Length: 289
Image 1 (cartoon, rainbow, N blue to C red):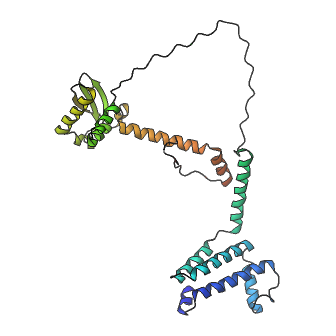
Image 2 (spheres, helix red, strand yellow):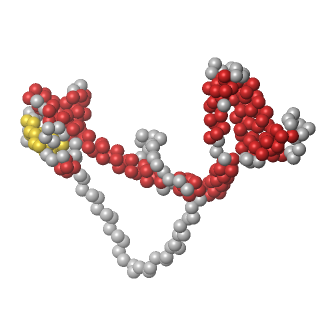
């Protein structure tokens, strides 16, 4: 149809105005029985318009009319009027039914009323009445709990070594230390585990080992000998590297974030009303969980 309009040299703005006139009459046909005195059309044309008006509810015709009025104003100043008209007709063809929109609005209003009345729309779990405590025989006052023994912590931990190496502006060495698994340290020996033929395995050449030993000696305050041993990739969980620790912490955080979101009363209410499901949970703030 648009190709024929273009071939006839018809003005696109005038074409939009005629569409607007047609939808105006469709709207009027839904509220007025006889348009003979209003519309400049023959009886046959009026009958055809009435048939078109009966194909949809008043709300659909009104929304189509509003869309065409907006498009007509844009066509007047556009360098691509045909494209605008084509897109307007595509939007007209893909408009959802007015009844569906009304149902969605009603559900949103119902959600607002529920949240305003008490937050959660789900029935609250009945709370059992507290039972009176049983009578207790008089006894000596309880002893004060003993303080727990202090836990011995090492000031020269593995994370501290990595931070020390970073402060010396050795990012490549720090990255290697983050990827290996610390196995033992003490008596001048630093033992680490790594997966054979891994990227880190290829980075630990003789020069890198000497530099790492010098940095470790500066951190621990004593000469250090680096020892490496190969471990299975699955066994790395028994002595996780700093990189694996961060990865595990991030996975746990994502799980807690999803659980918190799915258990939120507003989310539960929305799922119940719209009969939907949660496909993805994205954190708003990195430090939220």
